[in-house]
Length: 409
Image (cartoon, rainbow, N blue to C red; front, top):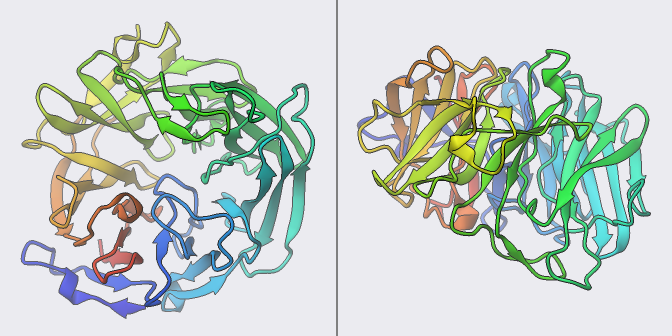
C-alpha cells in the first residue's frame, strides 16, 4: 500500500487519508464492480483483481487474479485464484468463502464451473459443473456475465449468460440460479432483452425478501448470433425488475421508460432493505439524479408509470445533480457516488440517507477528485465498506488503472 495525500484537495475533509492499494507499473488492477458482494461482514477483508479493468477482465488473460486485501494487515494482497477464466466473484455472507466461476464455455458448448475457496486460500472445491444443456432446456450458456450474486443465507448463487447457438440473431440471454447445497442449477428467466442483467440478490435476511433478485432489462437491444451486443437499448431505454429466484413474482421498479427519464444502467439495493436506488438521466431538466423506489406488480414495461410504484428523488435538494455510479453501506444510511461530468475533474461525494421513501440525501461531503480519465475501462466506480467507514475507487491518474481506498470516514 502507498499513502497518497497528494490526491486530497482543499475541499477534502482533514481527517481522511487516501491509500493506493495496487501499484504494479505494467499491470492494471481494479476493484470489482461496486454492486458486487466482495467484502467480509466485519469490513476487514475484501476482494479486488489484478490485470483487469473497471468492468471486468479478459477470460484468456493468464495474468488475471482475484486478490484478497487484508486491511488490518497493512492492506496486504494475496491471490485467491489462478485459473484462466475465473469470473463472477462473491464472498459468502458469513465471510468464509469466495465463490467464483471458471468460464470455459463456448457458443453452444464448453463448461461453466462454480467453485469456492476459503479466504485463506485453502479448501478449494468444485460446487457444480454445467457441461450439458441447462435442465429442462436446450440451452448451453456462454459469454458469462462478469458479476455473480449470492443470497443472504449463502445458499444460492446467480449469474447470467448468453444462451444462443450461433445460428440466429435475437437469441436469448438468461439468469441461472445455483443451489450450493444441492449442487444444481435452474434457468429462471430468459429472452433477448436480458443481455446486461446486473443480477443482485436482496441482502435482507427476511425469509421472503432474501429470494428477490434485482435485474436489468435492456429493451430493443441489438445482438448478433454470437451474443455480441452492438446496441444496449432503444429509444425508451432499460427498465429494472425484481424476480423471485424460482422465476416467479416478476415485478417492476418505477423508474424510466417515459421518454424523459432513462435508467443509466446502474442500480443497487439500499443496504439490507427492500428499497433500491438507481441513477437516471433526464432530458428536462438535463440532470443525472439518484432515485430510490420499491417494486410494484408488473403491469407492462412502463417504468415510472407502473401502478403502485413508490419512488423518492434522493438528489432533489442538490443543485444540478450529475451522479452516475454509487453504493450504500450495509445499514442503508450512507451513500457514496461519483459526481460529474465524468472526466478528470469528476469528484467523489459522500452523503447521508434519511427515512426511506421520504427524505433526500443530506450532509454531502466532497472527498476528493480521483483525476481519472473516466474512460470506460477507468470508471471511478466508488463503493463503501459494509460499516461505511471506508470508500474505494479506481483511477488511472498514474497512467495505468489502479485501486484506491479512502479511510477515516
